[in-house]
Length: 51
Image 1 (tube, helix red, strand yellow):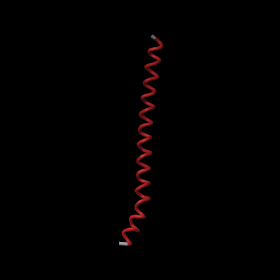
Image 2 (cartoon, helix red, strand yellow):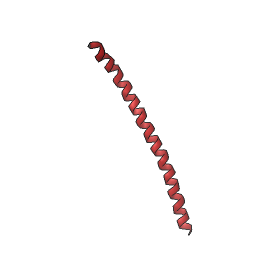
Image 3 (cartoon, helix red, strand yellow):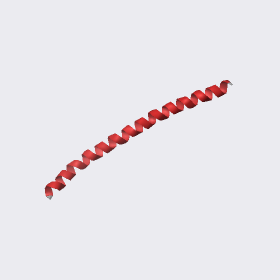
Image 4 (tube, one colour):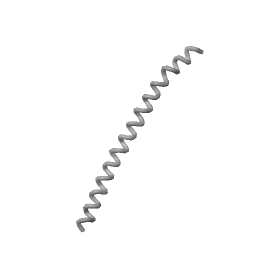
């Protein structure tokens, strides 16, 4: 029983690091998508301004 607790204590930081890396990756993907959307909005606004 004591060994399983030690294993869990070693696994918790590894799981936390994996979750943080996943979270950062999701944020980066969302940021890239938002940059693309902002560029499209700017293009559309410029087109409207020229008309």
